[in-house]
Length: 110
Image (cartoon, rainbow, N blue to C red):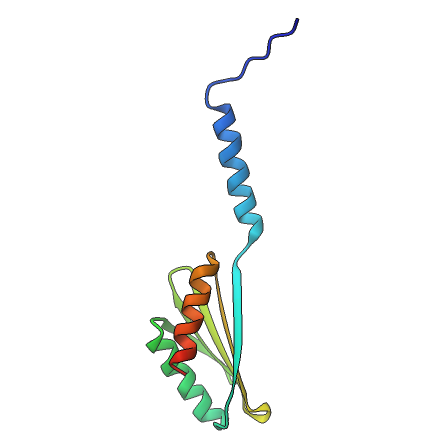
């Protein structure tokens, strides 16, 4: 008969390692939405910056078409596409509940 011996803590260590690996493989959550807008490109970008700040994000950078912000491990992007009369919103981060919450905060302030 063969005896099986486990080192103390090995089982727990394997469980924790598996949880960490599965979390790392899950990657960030991304939540998106859009709004129709009649704003010009410049007006849309200004409104995007205000919505990012009002949503609790620190403004990070900007481009010709987008404004970006961050809060902790979460990033927001608002892309203005005036020729299509649309603003596209994206929030990415480690927890889906918070990406949805932050997206709704930014949307409601746009």
